[in-house]
Length: 324
Image (cartoon, rainbow, N blue to C red; front, side, top):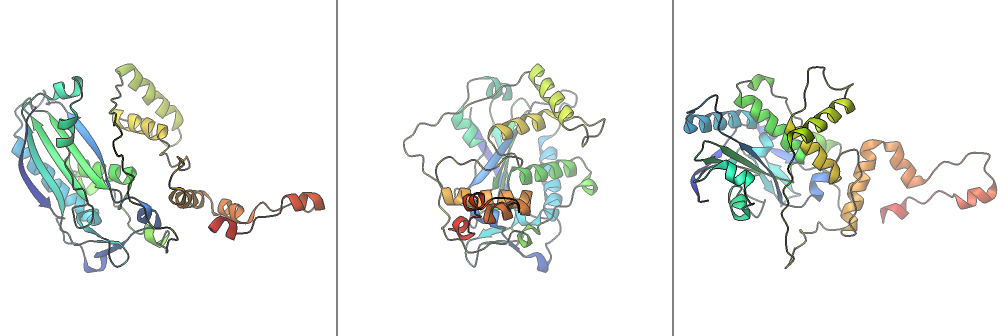
């Protein structure tokens, strides 16, 4: 399929960011993240119940609601600065918004053999985070009226949960409910301030000449129904009676669990970059319970009835053993 970019523009917050919010410090967790972009793409078939919707009108609605959303998520419209301690300059330069046309049918892309070259062109983004837009959104329109909306999001300012929160807020504003958007907080750096690291941040590992494999997972209606039922059973106390998890939510949750990215599971150590994993594990344990971290540092407090031999065998470890 042929893809042709129609235009590119920078979308800025609808309301300028106040001067007292011009600089956002990174957290210790953000500081450890690689300067790369993570992404997600949503596919939509043409809405048969609402045919003939003007694509220019739809794009304008997306752009205006995106501008409203950026007023709350103002750091996303800024730029990452590596100098002077690494921070986000909330200068309202904007996120990149791209419209591209594809001369093909979206069903062919979804159900045919994966076209890796086309998938890459549907989601273009910079190779370097510093000085470039922190978010890149590309809206791809197909001949059939279908849409493929991709979003690239730098890992320096958030994780997939942050991205999901931003997307949900944008969708809420696009439906005309901007007042219902959840206001995010950007004060986490006060809880997890950046400290001088003994080990420098490593650049992403190069793949070299290794062959990359792309996999596509398909979930039929029966599998999706079972996943939704499991989600409802596991969240009976926290989910409203009339609340139904979406297909995207249950599949994303499943993939997240399989990759070990759930906030209930500790960071996975793959045998490489031990110092980065150590810092992530430290942050994970401390976020769960500070008393647990105290046990890691000082060991288990022994009972008074323990014998001298047991005390010698269970002597608490010195804190410096864990910090080196």
